[in-house]
Length: 406
Image 1 (cartoon, one colour):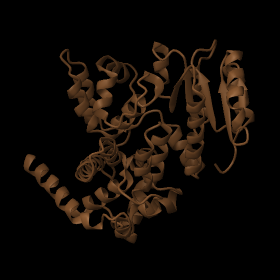
Image 2 (spheres, rainbow, N blue to C red):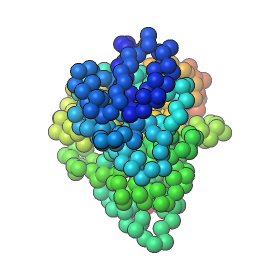
Image 3 (cartoon, rainbow, N blue to C red):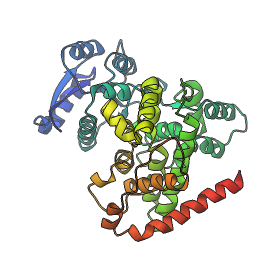
């Protein structure tokens, strides 16, 4: 990390804080640690210090951890917020779903804590733009399409509601998929497993939990803005779903690794999540960016970097990285438009999503965009250049089947 990160721990138990101090002693050269015994002390520290990460206990007298993180989200949205709790099944902990980026359980393992802090600090370095950090880190929920949200609510209220039906709805919405994967891959629900499939995530969480999250807590929000003059949210979702299908098919043709296949699918599903964040939070500016990209005949990601200091791949990767999604999925978002910077040649979710996105634009030309080409040099370095036409035919068949089913 470029500078020493400042980490604030908040816990009303002195013994816990003392244990944390001992546990983190070896990291003092990398990070600077602060400790508070209640939320009041924590807020005072935040007013005096530019803190990067807050790790708060859930159960504290007065202002509890959920209320503290909500206050931090509002006042200091750029801060990464982590909840530490020994009561993961407590109903009050559910209130943190919209305000915490990560969830850790007591007793905390030293290796897990150190890895989480190092990864969170590295993510902050990845996005070198304080305004965008505040925009992305301040998010509690991601906006979903109103019609999808309505379908989900209606289905959940049916007395004979089935998990398979819920999974199908969630898998068709990248924002819902991202949030469900954030939750199932955290220690919040005590599953302790890496899950890359939204469908499996729904099954692991169970119907009662999904109902509580959606109907009781509103972890999904309807899109606050309609599609713009040049930007269609519905088309973005369609593009994302198609790229996810392409990526999964390519991965399955080249590998029997189920983890790689699922990560390629999720990477394809979420690869343009940053566009949604830009559009939802910077509506007029993003319309202007599209205008400029079309006028100049340049890929939108180049114009985004000029205007915002980062592209949609950067901000999307930053968010899902904060949420703790697997590293290869984060890399797929981060590198899908700059695969030449990817450090490891070979078949990876990042390379597969780069190709899937390129094939989408090759097979469906004429849309409101100037696509970047597929980087043949990277495919050659990975000894995969001769596979491209096979992948092209595979994806064309997928499109043809979709049209036949319309």
